[in-house]
Image (cartoon, rainbow, N blue to C red; front, side, top):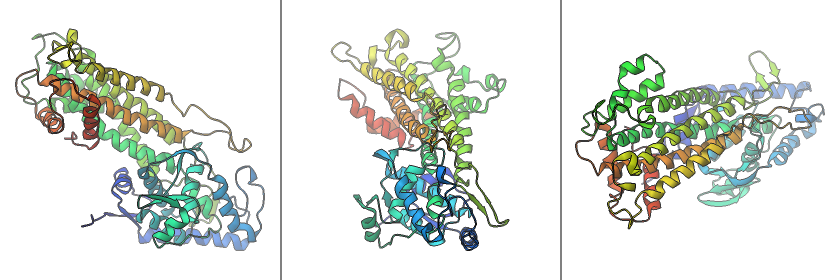
Length: 501
């Protein structure tokens, strides 16, 4: 029996990150609201009127970029749009995963549904049909400056719409023309403004930010319960999470992190009181709310920025059918996304930084009071010794990746486009950082579960559930085995959202 696919209606104004993820990963279907269709038609009528009046309008009757002063004869307007797509499809490198391509398509559809771009309804419908039929254009990862929109990536998307380029369909890579034909679709002949309307936007970077932000939320909650497990394994002091302490420094994320830690530790017999074993815990335990909380606040900020961008007009020129104005501006500039991606990468990397330090405390007998490297037969067995090496290596890699892309700019188009965002590079790096954070947390998760096995007493409300989840998949380490297998299982378990309580 085939799985029923959710239908998501787009109107240009209410697309959520969760819906983008559903389209990207669950193959949710897309349709337009009646209002969106009316807006698209009204916007297209503006283009037709401008053509009849022979008005000089950027990208409709002129060339692009530095060629904006070159007038295009009426008989060449359609050819201009096709030439735009072919010449701008300059991506290189590995292709984006299908989930990124689907998110990109969904975001572009939603932007066009707002009715400020001048595209024909039938052209927009073809993009919708491609997404619904799971025709995924092959879009190389490299080649976007993130300023005049994501020109190169989106051009590769549109190549398939005109029967060119390549796509993946039913698990096979083929030409765009064959993919359309296999799904019973026909390529479109682009008319005035349509090529520009399809590629002038921030959808490649925003697609990646949607997926990264969503995954970051899963990691945020997972990090809290994994940290709570480490606190129990090391008999930490939960008094540091007392609400009184966090009310007087009222950062919302810090308060929420402290609350969740106490919730996860509720009923635990594995913690200690101040002065019982030690007066204070080390920072990697005591300061979890302050560190995790700052990341939580950053994530909430980025979530707001990305949601706003999901429902924005990001092309040029913008057509206002209610006033008749056509305004050339810079809504395609990716600076808001570039800064958000760099900010979130830095914040997420800190979850890994402090996690690796907790792992070190778990495996180091001078710090933990537990068997060295969490093995009963140290010497014959290495136990968790090299898992900490791996975590340290990945944390170090993240430090390189967190150098901000958004502080760079290289002029393009004969200096017409003299400041660019590099937002797509920032978003690509962010996705790598988020994946790395999950790996580091997976190592702490494994080590914390192993360490808990050496103790006694009831686990907390949240930590008990998290411990049981990992033990369904991964047994206690009695003797050395291929650790990468366990690490990959823990990585997948966290990524599945199983620890989001």
